[in-house]
Amino acid sequence: MSSVTAPATMDQALMGRNTGWFADRGIITINLLLVLCQISSYATGYDGSMMNGLQSLDEWKNFFHQPGADTLALLNAIQNVGQLVSLPFCAFACDYFGRKKTLVFGATIILLGTGLQGGAQNSEF
Image (cartoon, helix red, strand yellow):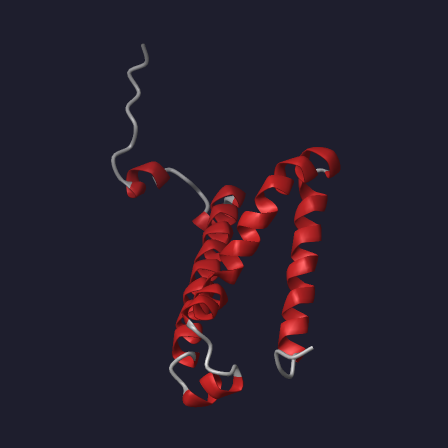
């Protein structure tokens, strides 16, 4: 058995180091990943708030011809519906094509959809 005990505080863990936190690649990587998670969470919350705000505007209701409860629910849940529909294919695609290629393909679809949505003039075909 080892008699070494784990440090109780961050100051004790960093004691004796000659460099700052910015010199540790692992700490930088985890902080960048955490920032990405926070941005993703922020964007999801912003989208939900925006949709709720838009649905209270008379101009929006008139433009979409007074949508009913079913249509409003679908508009709010459509991102999650897309995730659920693609779920059965994700494991197969990662195994067959590789994780990185599958992620790049998914990101490309998201960027194309964002461009189409951003350039859309109305919901009519």
